[in-house]
Image 1 (tube, rainbow, N blue to C red):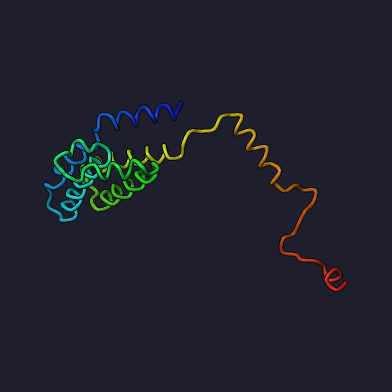
Image 2 (cartoon, rainbow, N blue to C red):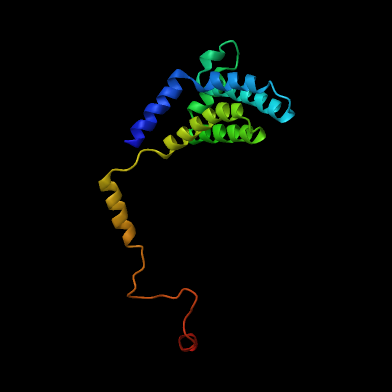
Length: 161
């Protein structure tokens, strides 16, 4: 059930491409500030929005000659590569400036990265597969019948005879 809900919410974020224009727009709004750190965070957030656009929907950046290259690169990679990129970049921006605008704009990219991370984990196994795995792992658990001390070696009588 949770997996279906996550797939549905991820498809909404992916198909409607809400993350990219919001990150760029809120990043532009964050640039209207007095502090240099928040100005830098706003600029980085706009660049992050462009990076998301290049990776997810290169048709939005058709005016750039290299727009298809990042898309092709990340399509061949596992989901966790996108997850790591999105989470690290958005977390850096949120740490740089603690205003609401950076939390909302970069937070959307962070959520997208988190969803990619969940997708990288894959589907949960069926109940029968989990039961078989648990049964095979139970033979690895030591029992109390035969206590074994790892640190103790052979006794002195066994060593000299």
